[in-house]
Image (cartoon, rainbow over all chains, first blue to last red; front, side, top):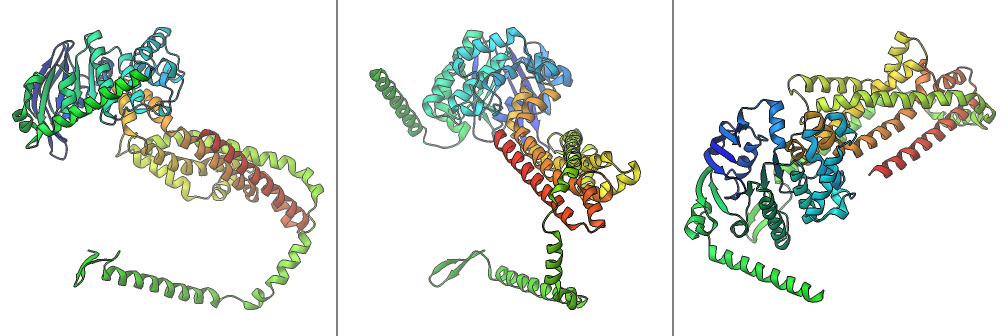
Length: 272
Length: 271
C-alpha cells in the first residue's frame, strides 16, 4: 500500500509543481494519473522514489516513511519500487539480459555487479521474466537492436526483476503506436493483477487510461482535481482537468483506432 | 528583424543592413591587419638568404640522399624504447585522466565548488605545457632516460584525455542513468552500469587516438635526453650525418603510419 500525504514540491526557480497532494493506493490497484503537460505528473511520480526531492509532505510505502530516509536506506527502499520510463531508458549498449539484471543492482555488491557475477537465482528469475514479456529469444541481443515495443517490455522486465512492492510508470506508451500501446498497457495491468502490485501510471492518453485502469487521478497545476472511477470521467470533469476541448471528437477518433486495430487483428488471424 | 516591409509586401534577408555593414567592416579590418603584419614580418628578413634558399635546400637534400639504410640496425632498440615510452605513458595518463574526468564532468562531480575546479585546473595545466617542456623539466629532476619520457608523455596526456572524456560524460543520456539509480543501485554501480556503457566507445577512441599522437611526440623527446629515437636524431644532427638523419626520419614515418593504421582499426572495431 502506498500513502502520499500532503506532498509539496517547489523547484528552486519558485515553480510550484505539487501543492499538498494526498492519496492512497491499496494493494493491486492500478491508478491512471492524467493531466495536461506541466501539471506535475512527472514530478509526483519522481517524488515518490525521491529521484526528485519533495519539499514537504510524506510518502509511505507500507509502513516505511520514504521521505525521511538517509541515502543508504533510501537505496534499499528504492529496490522495492520498480520504475518504467517513457523512452524506455534502457542502457542502450548493454544486452537485454544485462538490462534486466540491472534491476538486481540494489541487492548485489559493487564487484559482483562489475564482474556480472549475479546469483544463479537472479539469472533464472531474469529468464522467467523475459519469457513472461515474450522476449526469451532476445536475451543476448543489445538493447538498441530492439523495436520500441520490445524495449518497453525489457523495461517492464527490469522493473519486475527488482521484485517490487510498487510500480511507478511514466508515460509508458508515449513513443509507441496505438496497437503496441494497448499491448503494453494490457501486459502491465495483467502483471499487476498477477502480483497484486499497486501501480501509478502517468498517461497522456485519456481513452487508454479509462480502458485499462481501475481508478483515475486528475492533476491540474499541481493539485488533484479529480479522483474516482474511470466511468465517472465525463466531459465536465475533463474540461475541469484540461480546459475547453471537443471531447466527443477525441472519443470518436479513439473508437476508430479501436476498429482499425480489430480489423488488423482479424486480417492477421485470417492470414494464419 | 531580417524581415522588412516594402511596397511589394514583406522582404527577407539573412541579416539586417546594420549587421551586413558590420560584417563588411570586420572583413576589411582583417585584410588591413594582414597587410600590416606582413610589413612587420618582412622588415627584418635578410632577403639575400631567402634568395638562395632553393640552393641551400637542394644542397642539404643531396647530402641526405641516399639514406644510410645499414644504420637501421642501430635504430631498432631506440625504436622499441620510443614505442614503450608512448604506450606506457598513454596507459599511465589514461589511468590518471579517467577519475579526473569524472570529477570534472558537471553531472558526475561530487562537488561543483571544490572538486570540479581542481579537476579542471589539472586538465588545463597538463594541456598548456608541451610534452617536450615536461620532458625538459623531468630530465633535470629525474635525470635522462626512459622514465622521464614516460612521465612526460603521461602528464601531457592527462589533459587531452581528461578533457575529451569529461565532455563525453556530460553528453550522456540522463534517463539511462536515472533508470539505474531508480533500481536502488549505489553510486559506483550507477557509474559502471549507467555511465560506462555510454562512454566506452569514446574512451577507447580517445585512448587510441592519444597513443597515436604520443608515438609521434615520443620520437622527438630524445632531443632533450628522454630516450628513444630522438636521442639518435640529435647525435646524427650534431655530427652532420645527413644520411643517418634521413634514415631516422623514414623510421619515424613508418612508425607513425603503423600507429595510424592500428588506431583506425581499433576505432572501427569498437564503434
